Image: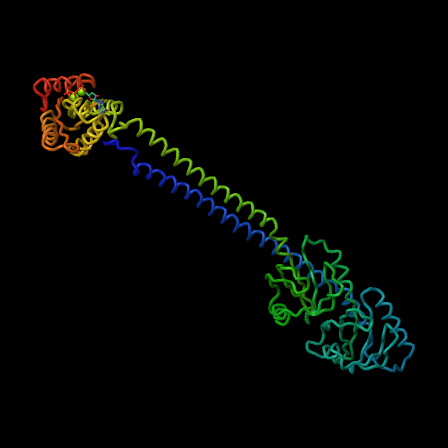
Length: 491
Ligand code: GH3
Ligand code: MG
Ligand code: MG
C-alpha cells in the first residue's frame, strides 16, 4: 500500500517496464531460437535430400554401366569358346578356315553397335583374325591391353583404360583369353568398344533440375556428361579429391561439396566407382538450386523476425508509456497538487479499507484531525503565496514526524487528517502532541511560526468513516475552543 502520495514516483514506473522488457525479450529470444532451429533443420534436410538424389542417380548410372558391357562379354566368350586354339596363327595354314573364322567374328561384331573392332590375337599379341580387314599379322605387344591379358588372374574379362582412337572416338578394349586343352593360354579375343553410347545414355537420363552426371575413366578423363559440354569431353579433371578417389581402390562412393572446375558452379558431388570397370560416375547438384527454397525461407524468417522484433519493441514501449501514463493519472487523481499529500478522495478510500480490515481482524486504529490556527492571519500578513509555502512546509513536517505506516492527507484548506494504523487514541494523542510541540517550538517558514489544534479519535465497533471523522472533528473543535495549540481526544 502506498503510504505517502508524492508526485508520480520513479520507482513504480520503472519496475513495470523492467518486467515488460524481460517478457518481450524472452518472446523474441524464443522466436529467434525456434526460427534458428527450423532453419538449421530445413537446411540439413535440403542438403540431405539433394545428397540422396545424387547418390541415387550415380548408383543407377553405375549399375547401368555395369551391365552395359554384358553383350560384348557374351560375344568375347562365344568367340573364345568356339575357336580351336590351333587356329590362332598367322599366316594360317588353312586359308578356308581362316576366312570362315574371320566371317564369324565379323558377324559377331555386327550384333552389337558398340563393338567397333573384334580380333583374335596369338599369345605373342600378333593379330591373327580381325573384323575390320586390316592390321593382320601386326604385333601389338607394346599396347596396354596386351600386357593386361597376361596378368593374373588370366581367365577373366580385362578392360583397358580409355583411349582416343585414330577416328577420334573414345574407346576401351575388352579381352578374354583362349585357353588350350593343356591349360596354357593360346591367345585372346579382343573387342574395341565405342564409348559414345555413354553420352547417348546420359542424354536420355531422367535427372532432376540442376543436376550434373558425368562418367570419367580412372585416369580422370571425362567420357560423357549431361548437360553435354562438347569441349569438356576427353579433358582430364585435375582435382586432388577426385585423384585420391580414382587412385584408391577401397572407396566405392564419396559425397562432398566443391565448385566444379568445368563450369565454375558450386555443387554437392558424389563419386561412385563402377564395379570391375575402369569408370567412375560423378553426379552433382547445384548448391544454389538445392538451397533456393531454403534461401527464400531464410529471407522470410529474417524479415519475419525483424518485424516481430520491431513490433515487440514498439508494443513494449507503447505498453510502458501507457502504464506510466495510467500510473501518473492515478497518482494525480489521488494527490493533492499543492502539498503532494494524499488528497481527501483517496484518504476516504483508504479509511474505508482500514475500517473493513479493522472489522475483519479486530484491529484498532486512530485518526488525527488537524487545523492550522489563525491561518487566515498568515495569508493576510504575508500573502497567499507565502501561505501556500507554509502549507507545503507543514505537509513535509507532518509527514516526517509521523511513522512510515501513517498516512497524512490534506483534508481541505489548512486542514489535514492523519490515519494511524494499529494505534489507539492515547498513542494517537502522543503523536499529535509531538507534531504540535515541534511546530510550536520552531518557525515553519522563514520567521513564520504556526500552531495547530488537533482532535484524535479511535475507531470503535460500528463506526463508519463519517462517525469516526465527526468525533475527531468535535475533538478538534474543542481544542480550538479551549484556546488552540492543543490536542484533544474524542469523547
Ligand atoms: P482558526 O484558527 O479558527 O482555524 O482560524 P483560521 O484563520 O485558520 O481559519 P479560517 O477558516 O477562518 O481561515 C482559513 C484560511 O485558510 C482561509 C483561507 O484563505 C486559507 N486557505 C485555505 N486554503 C488555502 C490555500 O490553499 N492557500 C492559502 N494560502 N490559504 C488557504
Ligand atoms: Mg479551518
Ligand atoms: Mg485554521
